[in-house]
Length: 190
Image 1: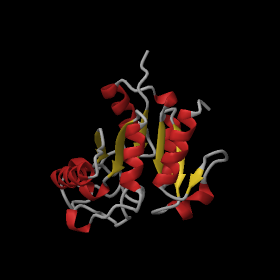
Image 2 (image 1 turned 60 degrees about the vertical axis):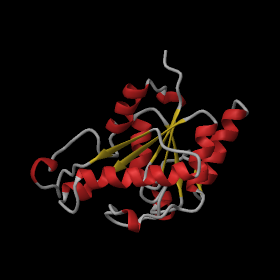
Image 3 (image 1 turned 30 degrees about the vertical axis):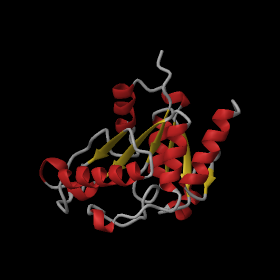
């Protein structure tokens, strides 16, 4: 039986300031407290895995290499703070607005759970004891479909999205507040 626990993180609006179709390092900015939240989760023994829809690839605004380059930049910035992300998964597809091979129905685009399920297979994760943190209902739905516990943050689109949530999904001001709640629960065996 797998026993590794993870916290899946949405990227835009959860880790970094929301900027539509972000793909350049010079436009990237962490939401205050996000790097500290990642460090807190890592120090508590969680795998930290980013799962992000990147329909800008599907739309032809930028390519998959630009997404990977931005993730390498994030890694370098997090490393300077003594932390990091274990893996990045992204969906480059869009069922309606994609071009070429990127215009398709897929199982990786949130609210579907494909990225989480793939990460669970790749890293032998116990999804039932894992979490997903994001700023959109689609993040919450992906987590529920993967049998993870969802937490919404009010950053990014979260303040507006909180009104759409099913009952019982906790809402936090930001990633750091959500990470503190997860670690506190983990340490107290709740």
